[in-house]
Each structure stands twice: as structure tokens, then as C-alpha cells.
Image 1: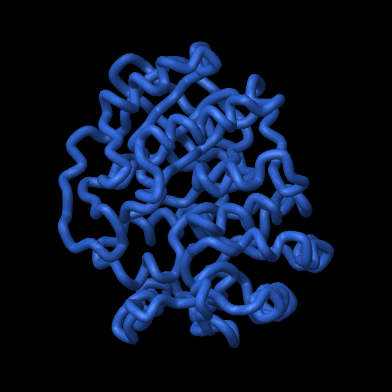
Image 2: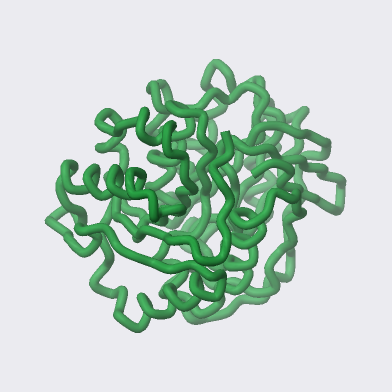
Length: 322
């Protein structure tokens, strides 16, 4: 089930199912994010507990659930965007009112640790969720036009669209150095595929493996990204953990997001890693796509459909249902 699309005048609720807003997130950044969403005709409000941070940089499970459930129950709210990622969203999964989510489907979009929430909501309810910029990313970075355009394409329209590499990027939303995207997408394994899109942050997905909250990988195109907490050897290992799952042989293709510098991943290492895995020999694989912890970031549907074609020198990706 695809949640209702947005229109000008709709309302966004910002909540913190993982970490609350960082002290580094200033009022100017908050206003910048509000302004960017305002350019789409959207208004913004905040959950009661988005600024609370304890020694784990979050607040209690009960308070986070209250903000999540309030956002779904409030008829004025059409879209939910987490404040940021973190390391604790999986604490909520056993206690969510999934019946409420299914009865009142809404767009929810975030990244990183929000992978656990977005994948679990899709698995339990069948309602499509989204892997895209969180609120901090929209406010902390000054190069978000690419991100906003993909929000427009994904949330305001039902039309399919092709992904194009961004011209520039930064290593994180906090980074000011713009890097020219000289390579574009990295084609590795050739082939064509079309299937249901499932994915998110590689480490967080590993936390879901074997649980009731992990979506079925049958007939899927996996989109995966790793941030700087993993180095390139950890990326290899966590990807292998997914390929060791019983249904991994039914994955139709893999799309990998751009790596942050501290991972140490290079194009050469990436190609060697992919080609070392016999499980991937017969499916298309592409890397360096604009999603993950670098900025700007496109938006992928979890439970939508994606088509991909990889040749020796080119890779194309089209989001067909979102």
C-alpha cells in the first residue's frame, strides 16, 4: 500500500524515534530546513520530545512511542520526518501500534538508524515507507536542492523517474567541502532487473536479520549504504551477512550508496569486493549512488518498485512505483 501523496498545504511532523536533535543543530539550521520544506508548500510542527537527550542521546521508549503514535493519529499530519538517525530505533519495534499505522497510512522518511523503523513498519503493515533525508540533513547542509527535488518527485507525484548522479556532494551534512562527482554511478556487474525495493543502512539491516521485522528479500532489489562507523572490511563482512540469509539467492539486483571517506572504500576495492562474491555473479550491481550519509541524498521507497540496467560502462536506475 502506497500512502497518500502530498500536496501544497500539507503538514509535516518532526519526531525523534532514534536520537533527539543534536546540540550542534542550531536555530538557523532548523529555520533552513523549515524553509526548504516550505518551498514545497509544507508546514512543520514538532513532537513533544524531539529535543530530549539522555546519556544515550535519546529519550525514553515511552516518550518516543508517544510522539510516533501521536503523529499517525493526528489527522492534520500527512508526513513524518525523524529529526536524525542514531542507535536506538530498534527499541521501539515490539511496542508500535502497527494497526494504527495500517489504518492511517502516512509518508514516513528517514535514514541511518531509521532503517529499523522504516523496514519494520513496511514488514508489519505493508505500507510503503521511505529511505531519504532526515530533518537535520535538510537543515545542516547548504546543498540540498537535489534532495528536495527527489522529495518532490517521490512524495508529490505517482510518475516514475530515473535517477541521475548529483554534480557535487559533501561527505556529510555537517561538511562544507563540496566535491565534484566525477565518476557518477559505478557499474560493476552487468544485467537488468526489476523488483521490489528493500534496504537502508547496511549495519542497521544486520540488526534486523532473522527477526520478525526484516522484510522478505524474495524478488527484491536491495539498496544498501554504509556510513563511516564501518570501514571497507566491515562493509564486506556485513554485506556477506545478508548474502548468507536463506532468501538472499532470490535478490534480483543490488544498488549501493556512496561511501563516506572514513570507510576507506575506493572504487577499486568496491569492484574487488563485489566480484569476490559468487552469490552476485548473475545479478546487476551498481555503486556510488546518491543516497546514504553523504549529501545530497535521493529518496528510495521501501516496498516500492525499482528497475535497473547495468552495462560495462553505464548504469541506469528508475523508480517505477513509490
